[in-house]
Image: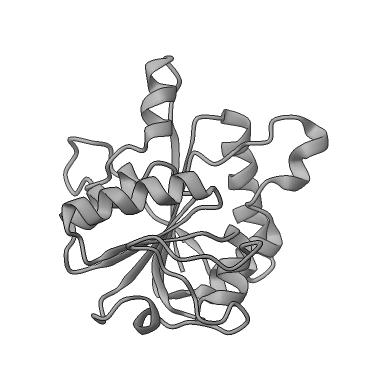
Length: 209
């Protein structure tokens, strides 16, 4: 949680109480499906999604204050009413701040892969996270994941399989490639553009609760 009280940035969601669950109505004035962008970076994905889907609400979660301020300025300049940013740690947001079964889609795009074996315990996608994710997603809600790191991709596949074997309620969905029939509108993040410029392949997974 933020270390001290401060004045929120324009378009920033500042909870009135960090120790209670908040419904989508607490975040946005209009009751539209809520999507979460965990680690929203410079806000490129968040903003393009909000522009393309005015009938949905988008909340970016980001720990770094400088990024939060930058994204808020862009949202305000564009006059978007369906996009906000929350400065908070990702897992805490899902586990304790958001109401259960309140998120229609959760996007985790190019997160830190923590490539060294001794750091694997820091990876976000683990069994505890998947339990939290299952609780926060709506029925038929979706989890969409992208990474440039092949080993982390395999890790997430194995974690999802293990979770399913223990009774988890996720089923994998196809993710049509760009240009294919039924392709998703899915803008690239700043991280994805960076890794692709270096010739790296982006691996993707899509699951439904």
